[in-house]
Amino acid sequence: MGKRVSFLSLLLLSLLSGLALRAQEDPGQMERAFAILEERGEIVFEFYPDNISTVKQINTFLSVDRKTSMGFEAYANEEGFRKFLGYNIPFRLIERQARKKSGTGSGEFPGGWDSYPSHDQYVSFMERMADEYPEICRLDTLGQSVEGRNILIMKITGNPDKHEPEPAFVYSSTMHGDETTGYVIMLRLIDYLCFNYGHDSLVTKLVDNIEIWINPLANPDGAYFEDDGIPEPKRFNLNHVDLNRNFPGIEGSEHPDGMPYQPENIAQMDFLESIYMVMGANIHGGAEVINYPFDTWESLHADDEWYRRTSREYAREAQTMSGPVLYMLDLDSGITNGWKWYPVYGSRQDWVNYFNHAREVTIEINFPKYTPSAELPYFWHYNHPSLLRYMEQSLFGIHGIIRDESTGNPLKASIRVQGHDTLHSDIYSDSLTGYFVRLIGPGTWNLEISASGYEFTVVEDVQVNPGQATRFDVTLTTLASGVNRRDGLEISPNPFIYQAELSIPVSVPGLHRILLYDIRGRMVMEDLMFCEMTGIFIYPLEGSHLDQGIYLLKLISPADTRILKIFKSQ
Image (cartoon, rainbow, N blue to C red):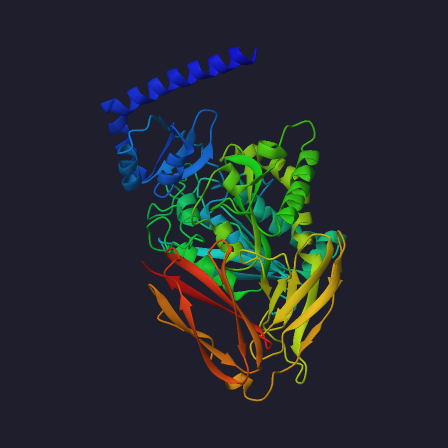
């Protein structure tokens, strides 16, 4: 039986590949592909590579969306499609089906939550919610899209006009403009939180203790590309760029997709760096699975166990709510590691986790990217308990406030879990409040806490229990006189080719450890230097044996721990 299935699969693949080859050679098909590109700026097709290494190569200029039973589905702009043709890979053009207009133009959105809003209705809804619930809501604008539409975000919390010592949680949706289900679900979540605040215990707990941010529509130009009623949205933005391939690459490439950072993404990055983001999720469509980091490489996040557990909890709750409907069961019963699914470079998820030191997953909320409007209430029913419980995760783990011992002023400090943190999984306290959250699985942990100009501190045996918060405050002691005025750790030249000089300011004599890590967090060098007195010491860094790329140099001194990014050129 197994051999028969294998033979049939091979036969089907052979037939499909033949059809795809003929489609590639068919002038009519090629003419149709370029006509769609001229009209929409993007096409969708399925392709059938010989091996996965080819996928990794072309994924730098194609937007590979998902694996299919026989190959991969991808989006391309004209430049990417022309590059793809040079690989002579069999493919099949996928014609997009025109969607029926939502019919919201004559009625008031949201009605029964079984329709998509026009853009004007979307804006009016957000403004109305902020006006009706001013005690917990504040409407803000992250920036503008290519076409000049405002990228709106709603802040929902107990004191929306204040910055309090609490975790910021961010939900964002529809950075791919044709993945619209999450868009409406986020609007309904805003309504649900506001309406149930003070009445539902979980909602009240979340709003009172979390700075909730909800950005329902990250790519307004894509969603409203053709018409105000979303009949034919497109994946890319108005510049034909996939926004989820347009963030800085964690593997060292500044622009993984070869495109300038788009205004939509610049707005997102500026915003996420301006708040004390602890956790979040970015909602997509095209599958039914929770995708956790990393997308870029095989190396796992230090908190991979935590990611798998919390993602599993989301998926299981959604499966329970869907009852007999088979929902959220893709891949490993509704969860997957991003790279294991298929590699993606320049994703938002990786940027948030690696560069912003926060925790974010990608929720693929439904297999058809466009849910018929009448079915939208079902997906809300399946997901809304999971959406609430997932926000609650930001209230667990290790919480506290870091202050200056003598003044009581809040401090921005590095918090690192000994023997655990890698690949930028360490976190920082909020510079305005000193508040920190270290989300982590159950266990007993030692925390290294360091800040420039302060003594290095280790808090030992911190116990974390499931579904609970462990809370404690830390005060840091100022180093000996003159430390706050010392010059910083420096390297010259930077970038360097063969050798560089590391300038080390020593404020406390003693043993100094010099560690060098590559971009994946692997230690490639370790050395010791004993300094008998204070002053500036020069350490010659030999780098001729190193590969080209970005490295992190970590200096552990009797006073503190400092990290410096260095660049090795050819």
